[in-house]
Every structure is written in structure tokens, then in C-alpha cells.
Length: 166
Image 1 (cartoon, one colour):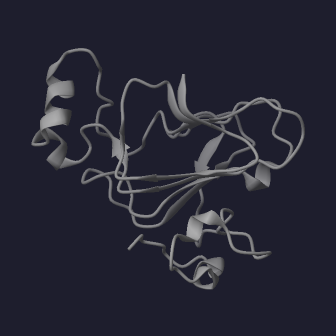
Image 2 (cartoon, helix red, strand yellow):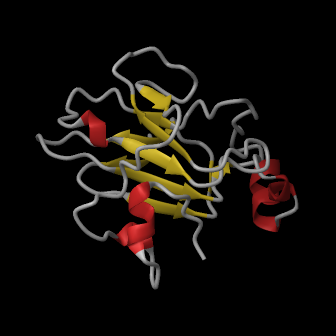
Image 3 (tube, rainbow, N blue to C red):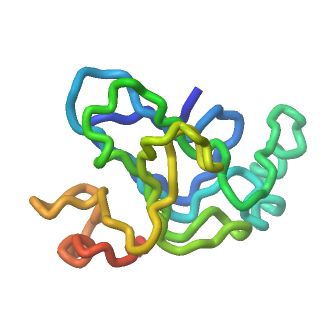
């Protein structure tokens, strides 16, 4: 069970929490083509923002005993599952966070990409954090995309500058 199953497109996730999923994202089985990804801002597993414990709705869910919170750690162990045998262009598979994972794991702009190794290094199967300057696999230089947002000049993001929604 995953919240996002993507292929040929992508998602923008803002101010969100997740709980009760095997993985946040996975690759949908489909025929060959171009896989894309997920961009997250101010989003994390439920309980990773200190304010989650003061929010009435989150408080109810946390206290209900119906869900098991992901323990705070140095990685998000259920971030993504990219074990699919059907990834035609793994260089285009990615997940971006613009400001980390809640108050617990703030990291600024980070990009997670497909790892050819099946070893799980803490983010999920076939997922690794890009080391060094992210390559901005989300933004293509061939044109503007929905990821840039209303009234935002997309050209600044083609060179991998941080994107913080206004």
C-alpha cells in the first residue's frame, strides 16, 4: 500500500503527513516510458513535526490507537519502494524534499533517486539520497512544468536552486 504510485507524471505534496502506509511512493507497473516523481514541502511522517501533537485532528489520530507512528530516526524508512521490474528510465525516477522531514529531520533541499543496488540504506528499496549538488531531475530544461507554481518564473529552478513555495 502506497500513497503515491507514479509513472509518466508527478505530484506536488505540501503541508502533509502520512501514516499507515507501507511506503509513501512507489512506481506503478506500466509499459515502457518515462517515470517521474514527487516534490514535497513541509511534509513528513505523522508526529515528525512538534506541532502535530498540538493540532486537534492529528492529536485525535495519534491518540486513537488506530495507527502506528513511524519512529523518529535519521532516515524515513518508508519513503519509497522502487523495486519495480518495469522502470524504463531510472535516471528520471526521483523524490525531492525542499525542507526536509518535519522538525525532527530538517535538511533543506534534498533529492532521492533510484539506486541500482537492492540494498536498503534507510529510505526504502532501491532509493538513495543524491550526494552533492542535486541534479534537479524533476525540472526539465525543455520547457515549463506544473511544478513551478502560479506566478513563479520557472527558469530559476532549471539550475537546481531551492524552491520554497510562496
